[in-house]
Length: 121
Image (tube, rainbow, N blue to C red; front, side, top):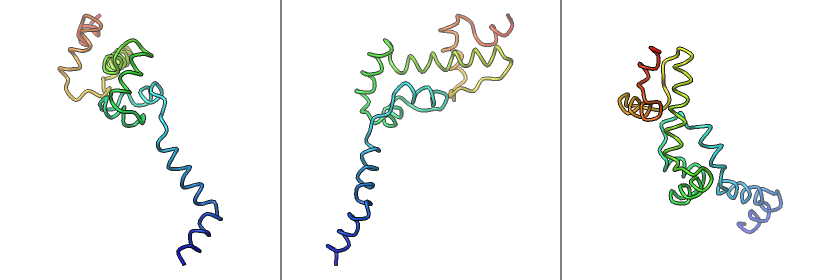
């Protein structure tokens, strides 16, 4: 009975589709696209590595080869550039920072002034 069930499963192409679907899940995703889509979420670099289908060390190595900076550096810059863009448009800032003082410190390290000082200018 099990053999007949298996043969029916293979004959209906379900077997091939199941194998194909499992292989798709193992494929690596584009690092840059993934980070651009989700940079504003509160994800760690380990989360990005998992989502991309890579180990953390492979993710860091491939990213650094492509961008000449670590994923963490890129992520901080991207969040801060987006924050400045929002501040310039008069919006409040919400780009994946839970700690306001960390955000202000990162912002100041890039622009030399706090967001409040930038808004005054």
